[in-house]
Image 1: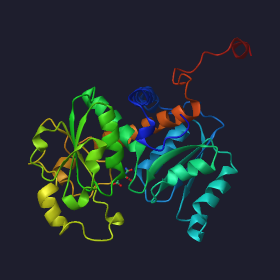
Image 2 (image 1 turned 60 degrees about the vertical axis):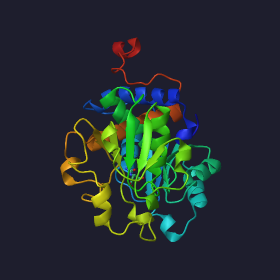
Image 3 (image 1 turned 180 degrees about the vertical axis):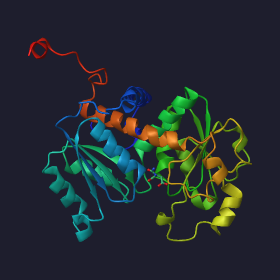
Length: 316
Ligand code: NCD
């Protein structure tokens, strides 16, 4: 596999292989020195044209823990600010001969365009409201840790589905792993024809108690040019996940950042049912596994204990 642009690039077996490798990298994250030499001498460029805390920091850490050289470019403070086009920026950064370019952009299809302009492997870290495949992978990883398997599980994705790249990637990934997915929100925030992805669509939370997992989405104010709900207070009254709506035993997920008091009430955010911190932790090892898959795939990961000294070194 050369690029990771969409969950559609992955079969179930690919997802399982990447996540098994992520689990082996979790052992590295538990060490005092959290590094393996796998990508020593290779360069990873992180190109972030949109706000990001979790995704950008975890991609940076993932590349560093694999010993790659990392260049992180943000639109603010770079020549992108001066009007340099995406193509020119990619060509400029290609002069460093990167092995991988990780890109986040507000534009649908940006990662696919970058893949046409470079010989590096490209990872889509979010392209507008289209896809965010590594988020879906880290969410499946988190659920496998908690539930063992997703086969036959019911997952409800609740909120602003219309503007969410996480919703699209997660519907595809959860279904590929055997789960049944329902998306739920006000009609104005569910894209028309979304059922064609294979999921159910609901406009009320009536069926929520039957879910094994409740996945809340952020209201994406930055992508709204008009009012999609009468007010946030009315939205919260109908769709907010709070103590009363979360059944004991259900898991609660959210990709972050959370709008406290809008899609989630404070009492559930900090409850043991919430996996929000585990999702962030999973982000590092899953992104290590993705970089490994694209740049070093096919070889066994070098996560074993430090190699025994070679006879020549031992004698020296
Ligand atoms: C998501 C994103 O950027 O699409 N966040 C993330 O990557 N952790 C979801 C969001 O911003 O709501």
